[in-house]
Image 1: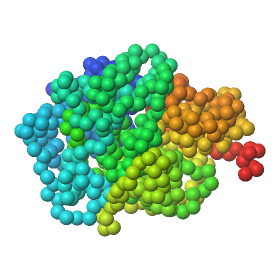
Image 2 (image 1 turned 180 degrees about the vertical axis):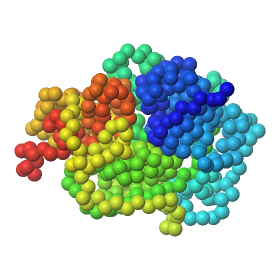
Image 3 (image 1 turned 90 degrees about the vertical axis):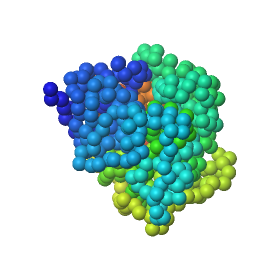
Image 4 (image 1 turned 90 degrees about the horizontal axis):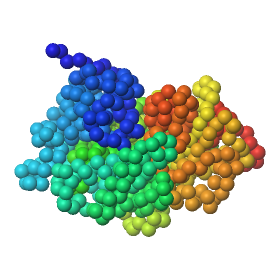
Amino acid sequence: MQEKVLQLGDDINTDDIIPAHRTTNPDPDRLKHYVLEHLIGIDSLLQYQVIEAGANFGCGSSREYAPIAIKAAGIKLVRARSFAEIFYRNSINIGLNLEIIDQSQDNPVVRAIAKAGGLIPFNQQRLQGKVTIPQSNTAARPMTMTEKMLAAASGNDYVQPGEVIFAQVDLAMSHDAIAAPVFQLFHQYFGSDTQIWDSNKVVLVADHFIQVNDIRSDPQAIKLYEQMVGFAHQHNCQLFDLVSPGEASGICHVLLPEQGLIHPGMIIAGTDSHSCTYGAFGSFSTGVGTTDMANILATGDMWIRVPPTIVIELSGTLPEHISAKDIMLFILGQIGCQGAIAKVIEFRGSIIEQLAIDERMTLSNMAVECGAICGLIAPDTITSKYLQDKNQGEFITITGDLDAEYEEIYQFDLSELEPQIACPPKPDRVVSISELPEVPITLAFIGSCTGGKLTDLAEAAKVLKNQHVAPEVNMYVVPASQLVRQQAEDLGYFAIFEQAGVQILKSGCGACINSGRGVLGKKETGIYATNRNFTGRTGDPTGKNYLASPRVVSISAIQGKISDQLVSLHESNE
């Protein structure tokens, strides 16, 4: 009998494959019913055996539930022109067969993992001394910043793009959406009494599903949180717990730098695709799946294909009111969601040198939307000042060799840059705001790891002072951490927001992953200072999510339509 093949296009993302709100119950037999539900309907994948797709299959989140659900639905092979790197690794780890069209992916380490039946049995053999990892035989060569960090972390003198190495991890992060399944896997396969490799290097954060019951009943989300807290105490991990019901200490990617846990040269793995944020501090940081993290807990290292690096050099004089969000949306519009698949983006140039840490974090955070596994910025005096304020000691600056090889170098002069808007349903459907037809809105949202930092709230407060949100618009602001909340309140931003009719919500991921207030209703249109606008990611799949800077979100809330034009008393007097 001939296998039935499902044909799909480019950029099939993990929210398309399995929506985040389905994953509070991780049972594969349940998940298989909802694979591609927004694209082909519930239970529709069960009639197919093969998926054939275009480029960048599995982009977006690092959630391993995507390949798990595909495998559970009976798919024997996923064939695509290219795969998002985290999805590729997650699939190899669990034994989902992948094929890259017209390209050989033969690698001895990947082949050994597949032969063993997946990453867990492979590492069990490693721990028993039955398998050893060969050292790199790469000859002396100039190396990029990323290559130097990965060479040092893997005990090699030199590495090159494409080779697979095992890199020692300096910090491992997980959160309430994923941590419980990670520890369950760890206990199941490495022993219920086995201690993790280094409890001082494991950080757990309650931030993702902690507000879901504000918008719908989901007792499984509560169980995930409770289990994570239990595992944190059992293994003596550093835990950033709730400060009150439904209120996070902070969103992981903002919280960890605030707490002084990130510094240059580190190798960081997080069970979240936006772990690339920490590249803003000159560290190599990337998202990983559940199986990868369970193995990191056992071995302290992770396998990774050494990525090539592309350089994005930003120059010119940045126009007034243009922020890092506009810059990153512009880059997405230029190179697309496929522009940096399985690569590192290294940001450089005179514009970068002028950006504050908050703004650099926005660029690094959204590098993954271009397909990159890390968004890297070399440390400088701004980095040093930030770390000194966090009581960090001296750090070693790692820079690439002058004659290092880069896959591509982009140069953009931003002197004429307008505010940028990403139209649904992808973050690379970007236009300058002057090219956008009139778009009425009913919802405006400023928050998330991308848009809830102090600089973001400052942009919003500057616009909203002595203004009021349009009566037909609900506007929400979510401080990314308790420190941001306190600073914003002390600076008078909250008073401005409240006077303007803005609803200030508890810290947490919430609406960004359809798990808290601020989500889109049926056929509702909103503008968000978040990082993704995939179908169904921030609410009902019939809703439309436009991405923009906090400034444009704020002006749009006042105008009742997407706009960057607001002449107000306080601006005209500046």
